[in-house]
Length: 255
Ligand SMILES: C[S@@+](CC[C@H](N)C(=O)[O-])C[C@H]1O[C@@H](n2cnc3c(N)ncnc32)[C@H](O)[C@@H]1O
Image (tube, rainbow, N blue to C red; front, side):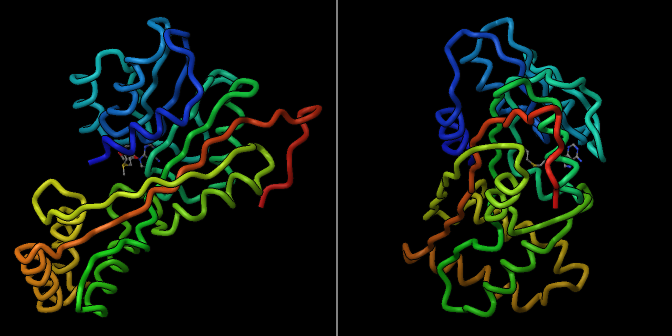
């Protein structure tokens, strides 16, 4: 599902083939993006996947032996020394962190001079499903967007659109925004739009979503698909930038 997004992300990086890089992927899941990066960078590179889920780390260690997994949860600091990475990546993880000021200052601290930062996040609040049941689909999109799942310390379904403001106003990075648009016309297992709607079952079970309204939307999606009218789309907003060197170690005024 994320194959095309990852391809775009790798194209946004300015990397010289076979040169060595020290890279941190924060909230790396099973390390798929680092696995792809490994094919581009030099053999002496250090690819570190920082991840709080034990299951993902175990899976990643089996799949990507060239990635060094750090099974740890970020709370308010990284255990890495100052200025040790050439590149900081994080995909769909920022919304889980309650204190963005602390995270941005930590990213800045562990990056080397002029190092790159690449952050991407789906904007869950703006998911698009073709539906005649406008209220029903709005409720489901909002329910997912507001759903703080057990593995998240915070949730913000509008993180995608916030990336620019967060990085730009921090005074710690200079960069640009880009966007990747996912479009799906298949309502089938394994597709993003399908999986997302099916995955809302826990909210139905605990009474946060009305079962009949939920079933109505699922039936409509199936029916639209059988008529060739199903359409789903979602945007991932991407911040690609570099660390700004602060004069005399001056600390900017953070929000
Ligand atoms: C939505 S997943 C994205 C995974 C991967 N980056 C990708 O794009 O496929 C977010 C990941 O961040 C991890 N995560 C969330 N909060 C974290 C924290 N405080 N410290 C480390 N990892 C965290 C989760 O366990 C999860 O694997």
